[in-house]
Every structure is written in C-alpha cells, then in structure tokens.
Image 1 (cartoon, protein in one colour):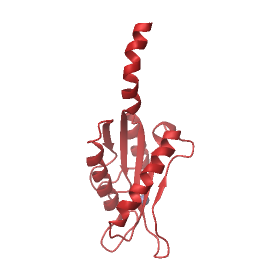
Image 2 (image 1 turned 45 degrees about the vertical axis):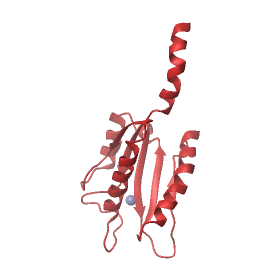
Image 3 (image 1 turned 180 degrees about the vertical axis):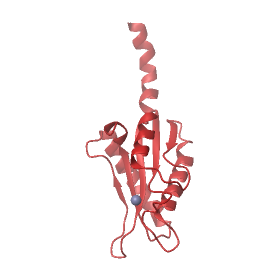
Image 4 (image 1 turned 120 degrees about the vertical axis):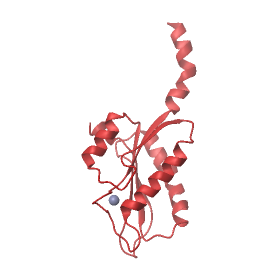
Length: 156
Ligand SMILES: [Zn+2]
C-alpha cells in the first residue's frame, strides 16, 4: 500500500494540472449569429477559437484541445455537446461575440453557476486578459466568453 502512495503522490500535481479543453466557436454555416457590416459573429468566434487553440496547445499542462467546429459549418447544440462528452474534456469554452447598440459595450465572462472554485478562479483571471485583448481590436461586437461550463458532464 505504501508503495502505491509513494508512486501516486509525485504524480498528483501532474494529474491535477493536466487539462483537456473543448473550444466551441458559436454559430457557423447557415447560422451567422450576430451580423455586422463586414464581419459576422460566426467568423469572429472561429477566429478567436483558432487563436486560443494556437496558444493553448503550447501550454504544457493542457494535454488536448478540441474544437466543435474548425470551419464555417453548422453544428447543432446537441452535436456540440455530444462531441464534448464523447471526448471527455475537462473544460468546455463556448465563444460568442454579442452585438447590441452603441450605448452598451464591454466584455462578459461567465462560468457555470454551480462550477467548482477553479471555474470561478479561471473566469476571474481570464476576464482581465479578454478586456486587454478587446482594447486592441476594432470591432462593433462585444465579446462574450462562456468559460468553464460543466456542460460536458451536466448535459450528458
Ligand atoms: Zn452567439
């Protein structure tokens, strides 16, 4: 018994710090989401997801990054959930850019209400970075990032 504990304890940080992430670029194909003069939400969502994936695959503690869509195709909500569940991702990040009028602006970052403390911590650390990134963009859209939802497991 002690032998197993001895082996397990050094592996614990690796197990805890290893994540698999499912990126979900919202909308796509026949569903443009919010539409702008030059840019539709579905395209913005895919661009942000691709950029996030490029970054995430370089993070040693992220062992797998999957995407519910990698091109301009329609994927139903059910298929998105099925993909995430079948690959048993640790986290599900849905990316959207909401449009409204010029009187409202800003970035929203959500996490699942009943998520873990880690979910809230990641939301809180992600949000300032999104705001910084948003300042560098010229866009009429507002960024909404629904992060760390436990849809993967809740909807299964
Ligand atoms: Zn959307």
